[in-house]
Length: 139
Length: 133
Image 1 (tube, rainbow over the protein chains, first blue to last red):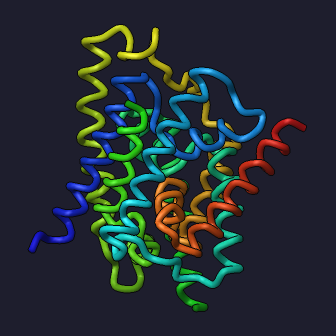
Image 2 (image 1 turned 180 degrees about the vertical axis):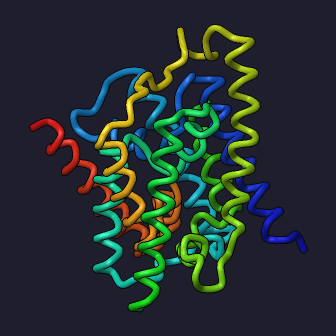
């Protein structure tokens, strides 16, 4: 049985390797909120659209495959549906305003030693920790 | 190749536990039986990406399928960066999903993730609308 820290490290290495592959082949930052946001209307054409769509198709395929072979890898939110909707609205608005999420800022930006990304990571880790603590108190 | 990168990214999220909101909340909430394993996810990802990124930048003028690299050029710490990141963190700590894991979980058929992603798209469109004004 592998320890959870080792599995987490392995999963992290896969995430970093995938982001590195996207950089080597397409020269792009693997930021999920940026990739999704850029595909919303007005949708770009040609290459600007193709690599983003292809990346998302691969991402979604991994989830569909997980449902077939490892359904326990995915869990439901621990909050009520109303709070999940509020969470989604905040994540959508916040990631676009703040130019990134856990992947673009947390993995790619931190690795490039970008000051903007490091400030963003410290900020969302702090408000995330405070919110998880407060929300855990009520529910 | 972008599709392979996307699938590998999703596999990494699934293996590392990022698609389990209860685990995310247990990582963020340090007050109740803290689960530190997600720090290793970021550590592993940053270690691999940092290394490959530097090697690629040093040894190549362009990626395989494009004329040049596309990297962020902004350096300023503006209000939107900090306010947006703060709002994102609140949503992350509340729902336990960030965008990538939310998409993977929604694709696997998780009802709460589908709800989360639908709301996230609305939130993104609202921000685009607000920034155009």
